[in-house]
Image (tube, rainbow, N blue to C red; front, side, top):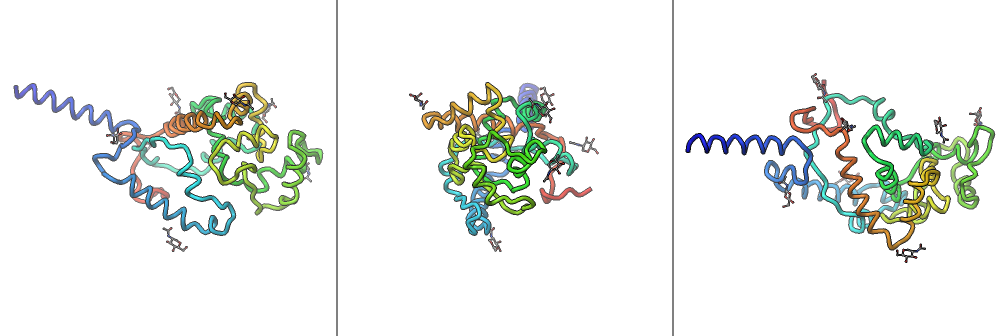
Length: 258
Ligand SMILES: *[C@@H]1O[C@H](CO)[C@@H](O)[C@H](O)[C@H]1NC(C)=O
Ligand SMILES: *[C@@H]1O[C@H](CO)[C@@H](O)[C@H](O)[C@H]1NC(C)=O
Ligand SMILES: *[C@@H]1O[C@H](CO)[C@@H](O)[C@H](O)[C@H]1NC(C)=O
Ligand SMILES: *[C@@H]1O[C@H](CO)[C@@H](O)[C@H](O)[C@H]1NC(C)=O
Ligand SMILES: *[C@@H]1O[C@H](CO)[C@@H](O)[C@H](O)[C@H]1NC(C)=O
Ligand SMILES: *[C@@H]1O[C@H](CO)[C@@H](O)[C@H](O)[C@H]1NC(C)=O
Ligand SMILES: *[C@@H]1O[C@H](CO)[C@@H](O)[C@H](O)[C@H]1NC(C)=O
């Protein structure tokens, strides 16, 4: 009887340890009840207070982004790395001027599929990019002082008016159609040759990603986008996640102390 209880206790402990050794929805349910509500409340205050938003630079309303945006269960339990290497961040991020082959490789090494790639690119329905990340498409696409022929001419003219050569400060929305709404507008922009970044336009150059872009331009498929976005965000959240006893838990998450 005592032995049986001991076995059960060990099993329970083992299962608890196993459970804690992976990302999961509600990781802090027992260890820190209510923490997700605290984080949500704080973020809401930060977004509401953000001066760049208030300045109308982006005019991104928290409401648009989170009330009408896709909802999914964020997995928690990710630990901090015990090193922070600046060059890794640059090296691992897909380049804004990458073609579809290059982009596919960047996602592939992170175990993310072409579908994840085209779905996660949909996050560009919000946000802006600075002039230098797209000016080459306007002024020197192949190095011969030319323009990217895939750009819609009216859109290119509009961009050139704001992003003059040498301008580094100007920003433009990545979804010119509905820049502050989390919707399928990004896919309409891409399909309409009004993608800001070459890496967005490149999605049309592959039959698989191109077909998915066109599918999502249809408003009746917006729910498909939201559902797929949730799946791909969770896939991305699992990339190289440190769990269990790997890595460390930093006192100040943005600072690595040796
Ligand atoms: C945490 O609680 C939520 C809501 O009750 C539940 O869906 C989730 O599975 C729980 N997670 C864990 C790890 O206990
Ligand atoms: C709001 O902005 C003010 C002024 O920039 C700052 O002092 C305050 O800490 C901010 N509050 C939040 C919740 O970000
Ligand atoms: C994509 O870009 C890479 C690196 O610049 C280049 O080697 C490759 O030829 C390009 N592929 C296509 C299809 O343009
Ligand atoms: C255009 O690109 C070519 C090749 O990279 C470069 O030599 C030239 O200086 C660029 N022109 C301008 C105006 O930046
Ligand atoms: C959008 O999808 C609906 C439902 O599948 C279909 O009936 C309609 O023809 C599609 N619209 C376009 C423009 O493809
Ligand atoms: C990708 O998957 C393989 C096989 O499951 C795994 O060994 C590797 O660590 C994963 N890479 C990343 C970046 O998650
Ligand atoms: C953390 O530090 C230990 C000891 O220095 C090292 O073995 C390990 O590889 C480091 N990285 C992670 C992700 O734990």
